[in-house]
Image 1: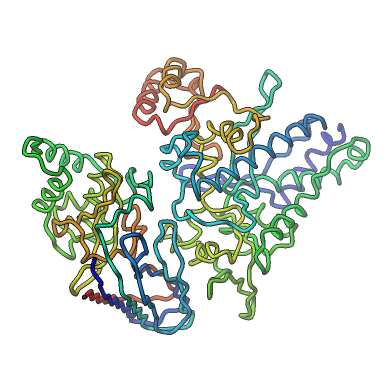
Image 2: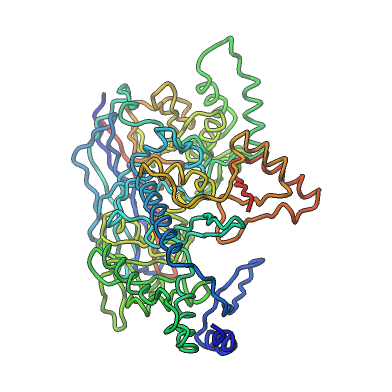
Length: 260
Length: 371
C-alpha cells in the first residue's frame, strides 16, 4: 500500500471571451476497495459552485458552470489517496457485462482482427506465461508513442492502422483486443507517479479480479497509479468536458503531479 | 355517424387550418403532411375497452418495474429471466442512467403501445414505445372538431370522452414535479410532431420551450423569460431524444440539448418525462420478453399477448424463420416508428437470400413476427 498526494491543474484560455460555459470534470479519484481518498478538493476560477456527483459507472464528477463572460477557466484538484492494488476488487463489484461488448471507440475493423489473428499465431502456448501480458508486449513493440498523431476522436482501429498514438490509443486498441477475446475490459483514466499529464490504461477482468494493464508502458498498474474514472472507453472517462457560447478558439494546459 | 361522413371535407379543412401535421424523414429530406381524417371510427365496445385498459396498465407497470430494475440491481438478468446480451447490446441501454432514481420512481409516464386486432378477433401488442411516443394530440383535436361538426353523434351515442387527456398530462407532470414550472421541450419547428408539442403544451398549461430557453445553474434547471428573468423548472415533458438531450452526457456534438440537464436530473432536481434510458425496454428484442417480465415482477399472466414472434437469437426460432422467411415480417430491433421493417412477401428470391444472410450474421438484430 502506498500513500500518494496528487495535484491536478488545468487551464483553458480563450482568445475571445465566452459565456454560459457548462462543464463536467472527472478529475477527482474514485473510491473503491483499492483506493481510499482523503482531503479531496476541487476549485475553479472564475469562482462558482461545483457539485460533486457520481455517474453511472461510479466515477466522481464535478459539475458546474461559468455564466458570465470570461477568457480563461482554471481547475485545481488535489488530495491524498491510499492505493493498494493487492486488495481484491471482485467482492465489491462484478464485471459489468457491458464491458464485454465493443463500444464506440473500440469497434474492430478487418485490420485490427487480422493483427490479433497474427498475434495469436505468434503466441506459443508451450512457452507459457500470461496471454494478456504477451498481447500487451506485442502491442508495445509494434505501436509507437507519438503525441500529435491522433486526436480525441481517433478509434482503436484507426490508431492501429496508423501505427502510432498516445496512451488513449494504446488503451483503446488493447480494449478492442480483450473484448474480441471475450475478456470484459474497461478503460481507465488516471494519473501516474511523477509529473506530467493524465494517463490512460485498461483493466481486464480475469479469474474474478480486475487487473490493470498499461500498454503504453508495457507494465501492470501498481500502487503508483491513481484511478480517476473507468468506463467503456474515453467517451465515458473524459477528464474535462464542457461547452460554451462564444466564437473563440481555446488552448488547454494540463499539469499533473503525483508524489509520495 | 352519417353526418360525420358528410363533414369529412370540412373537418379536413379545419385540420389543415390548425396545422395538424406530421413530418416524415425520407432520404434525409423532411416532408410534412396533413394528418388525414377518416370519418368512420373504429368502434371499441366498453367491455373490450376495459379489458384493453387492464391489459395495458399491467404491461406498463411491468415495463416500469423492469426499467427500475435494469438501472439498479438488474435482478431479472441475475436470475436468468432475460439474457444479459439482450440488455447490454441494446442501443437503448444507457449506462449513464445507471443508479438514477427518477422523481416518483416513474420511467415511462407516457407510453405509446401499438395494438392490432388479428383476424381471430384477438388483440395483440405490436410494439411498445416508451421513449417519446407521438400521437395523443391527433385524436384530441379530431374529436374536438368532430364534436363541432356533428354534435348529435355525440349526444345520441355514449362515447368515452378523451378531452381529459391534457388534464391527465398536467396531473402526471405535477405529480413528478420537483418544484417549479412544467415545460414541454421541443427540438423545434422541424420536428415531425411539432404540432403535437405546441398543442399539448397549450392544453396542459405547460410552457412550450425550445432548447435555448432552458439553462442549468447551480444544479437547477431554469426557463429564460423575456426581459432576462428566470423561472425554475420542476418537470420537463421533453420531446427530444435521449442522445441529443445533454451534450455533456450523451452526443457531444448535439446543438439542441441543454448542457448539464442530466446532472440536475441525477440529483433529483428536475423530472424528465419520459425518463432517459427507456429505449432498453421498448427495444424490439426485449419485447419478446415482456410476458416473462409481467410474470417475474407482478406474478401475473399477461392479459394482452404479444403477436407471435420469433427471435433469431434462439436456434430453434432461427430455423423456423429461415424456412418461412417469405411469409414473415422482419424488424430491426433498434428502430422504431415504422422504420427498419421488412415484409418477406415483398422480396424477390435474391433479396430473401440476402436477408437470410443478415439474420444469420447478426441474430441479435432481428425480431421476426408473423403479422
